[in-house]
Amino acid sequence: MKERLEALKAEALQELAQVTNQQQLNDMRVKYLGKKGPLTEVLRGMGALSAEERPVIGQVANDVRGAIEAVIESKQAEYLQAETEARLRAETIDVTLPGRPAGLGAVHPISKVIQQIEDIFVGMGYTVAEGPEVEQDYYNFEALNLPKNHPARDMQDSFYVTEDILLRTHTSPVQVRTMEKMKGEVPVKIICPGRVYRRDDDDATHSHMFTQIEGLVIDRNIRMSDLKGTLLQFVQELFGKQTQIRMRPSFFPFTEPSAEVDVTCAMCGGAGCRVCKQTGWLEILGSGMVHPRVLEMAGYDPEEYSGFAFGMGVERIAMLKYDVEDIRHFYTNDLRFLKQFVHL
Ligand code: PHE
Image 1 (tube, rainbow, N blue to C red):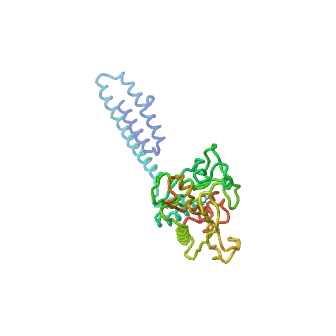
Image 2: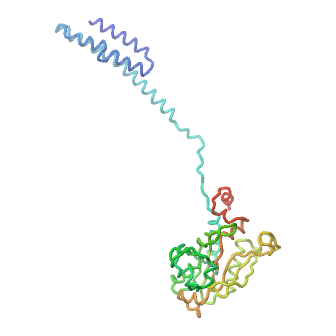
């Protein structure tokens, strides 16, 4: 029996030496150490042995089992190691590969123009105010000297939410809100950028939603010449030193007198071209001296205080400054259009 065991060991070790992969190793384990393997069979036959022989053979059988197990274990460890290495190799990240660039967004051209205009006015001592886009009729019209049924309300066809609430048609309500907040204090010196809404049919120069920047100054002794000087300074910083302005009499219920302001056409320098329709001038904003009734309603005594206000369309200014022929380009978000403004 001892010889059989030794032969079994020799055979197993020889066969194991030929093993080259995990599958074969598994087969070997079953074949030699499994329940139906020769070793188990020998051990099962031990009952027939004498009491003296039994421990001796038992010892040999254990040694044989141990030797076979040792070889299997070491092979197993080898395969495990090889497998781990292969996995690591497959999963290695090449940190020297160039990265995939993340697409960076950029500031929208309208936002950029707002920033430029804000910078100019902040440089003149203005602060930036804001107000709600969903506005009360009182602030949008009533407190701006536009009572109900006033014909001038038709100048600005409105989106109503309820009878008393609408999408603001201009940024002028922020004039009133600012004066209320200031409670009669001076100086008031603000600009207010924001979106406004009108029931217009969209075309190359009209949009039902666009952006305005409002300006308001209130103090003692504010005159029309202050308005003119301020606007001249502003347009020269925005469009260039050579730019001139002219003021044309106009009408707004909340300013008196009122003026529309034109700048010399930057395309032709005032000579007349397609953009300025041969006039040499381009209209860019509405303005005027704050109407006494508006001052009064907001808590400022018109005998003591005066002020000027102006309102401009940002898209129109951006179109003139960057020669954009259709206002809808600003809203359709075509990257080919927007990317042209990245480095402004
Ligand atoms: N709110 C006027 C408009 O939208 C512009 C304006 C503002 C005129 C301030 C005068 C003073 O047309």
